[in-house]
Image (cartoon, rainbow, N blue to C red; front, side, top):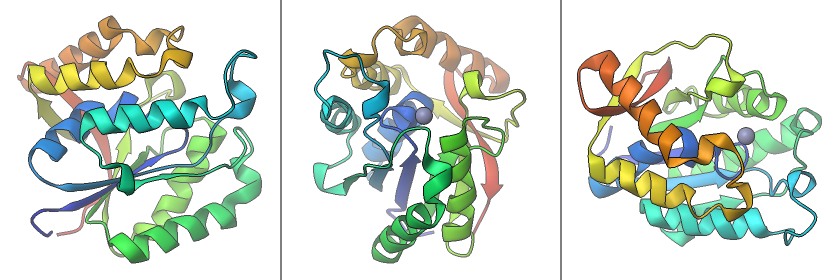
Length: 211
Ligand SMILES: [Zn+2]
């Protein structure tokens, strides 16, 4: 791996990357790594009627900025939410295109255990796109998982958790969802920290490790 490493977050929908890896992103950005973020849908069908159609893109720009990802490293695409299985090749093409440009050392994607159809597509296509060039970690989304493998722990400090909570607070349109609450974010990091004897942590599945 290079120093600084190049890291690519593959977030099926805006907010998935921040929810599962927000503390890790904050820590890696603080340590000087180059972080890129690709989200695949603006989820227009999932919004409340009063929301502007690009609200999630606006909120994603604010949230990722809070975590330390530069605006020029964001790629926000417009595949229709819950319809990713009909666009697998186009999604793969967009990953390969970005991968050629940035050559990531590490890709953080949905896990192999994720049951959401859009997340499954991003998981499968991330392997096709990056298995020969990058390490790949799978994100934990407890509401989408029946089981999960806890392979990789990233220890977090209070300041990383505060950045994550601050980033997720940018998603006003999603604030009714229980997993956006500071209580959930803090207790989840506390639980994963307890697994490995640190105060806070986020956990990932090891899909591919390249050295
Ligand atoms: Zn999602």
